[in-house]
Amino acid sequence: MAAVEDHPIAPPSTMPYPPLHADKKFVVLSDWDGTITNRDSNDYMTDNLGYGIEKRRQGNLDILSGEVTFRDEFRQMLQSVAANGHTFDHCKEVLRNNITLDVGFKQFYGFCKANDIPVVIISSGMAPLIRAVLSKLIGDEESQKIEIIANDADVDADGKWEIKYRHPTSGYGHDKSQSILPYRALPNPPTTFFFGDGVSDMSAARHADVLFVKKKPGMDNDLSAYCTREGIPHVLFEDFTHALRVVQRVVEGKLSVKDALALGTA
Ligand SMILES: [Mg+2]
View (cartoon, protein in one colour):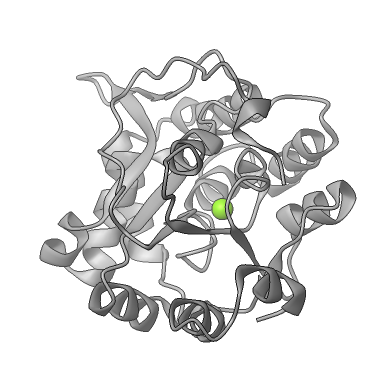
């Protein structure tokens, strides 16, 4: 696993970070799209409102192969949605009506709450869209309690919009390692669990104590392909019900981080 020293220079962030949960024993950091949700909302928008699945899928493959950066390709995907005349508010409504929650997430979140484990969403999507969908899925009050570290959107009065990157100088647009590395630098770091599923998680993959990669039956699994290629240990999980079994055993001290990773599948 890469050490903190591998990243001596953090890309400047255009947005603040919430304080670290430095006094906790465990911290859950999770991708939003396609991980906590069943389908990726940005893929959904690009496929249905933007330039379509074929071009979008090719874009993902080009990111995976390193031919293009996530930042530049993802911006184009979203621009194709805005260029077709879909306002930001319209996108919000479409996503609220079409994006559903992982079947086990509520139970997983309940376990974390009961055990004083913060759950932080680490996303390359846009925070206002995530908040809108999350409040629909788990309720306004509960959704306000979950921290979101994501990108944002610049929205004009006429409804035109564009993604605003957290780390515009990084090829990741949002370098997710920047939400994990500060934990590793603490004198008594909490155990970090990271959950992800796609190319937007490549920047995080090496850095958490336990990386969970969501299985995508019948769909492409870009993060799994990346981790296999790069030799990054990870635990495949079908949904959060399965992941919970592993997290619970680690939290209860019945399973070490090393043994958790050795499972390979939750
Ligand atoms: Mg994702």
